[in-house]
Length: 126
Image 1 (cartoon, rainbow, N blue to C red):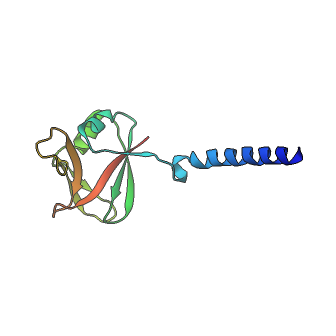
Image 2 (image 1 turned 135 degrees about the vertical axis):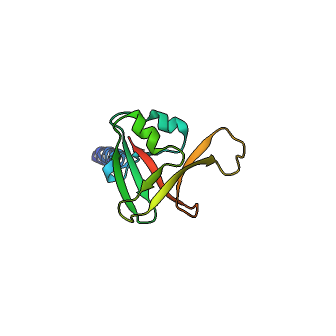
Image 3 (image 1 turned 180 degrees about the vertical axis):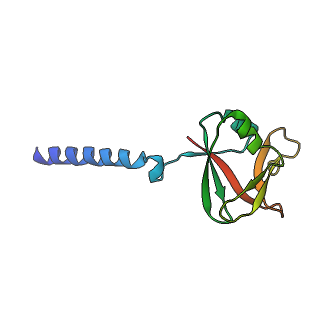
């Protein structure tokens, strides 16, 4: 009987710790970012949204507080220039068809350098 109680207690403790380990908060490595790629993602942005600008060139992250929908649209507009504060380079927002989806009505946003290489991305904090 003692063995059964010990096994039950051990199993319940393992289950308790596993459930808490799998439900990590965002600052401990849990999923928290929603990458902005489509027009519908931009339309979801509103006042008090927070965007994360990730620069692949300098390996830095910048948090941008969105004040209103107009600011979000301006930031994600075709041809908008975004400056990375760490590497001091300017990058351009372009909207293009996804690879292999020529003529598709769904465009994807990309932030590219002067050579057309993808160097940044925007994500929304949940």
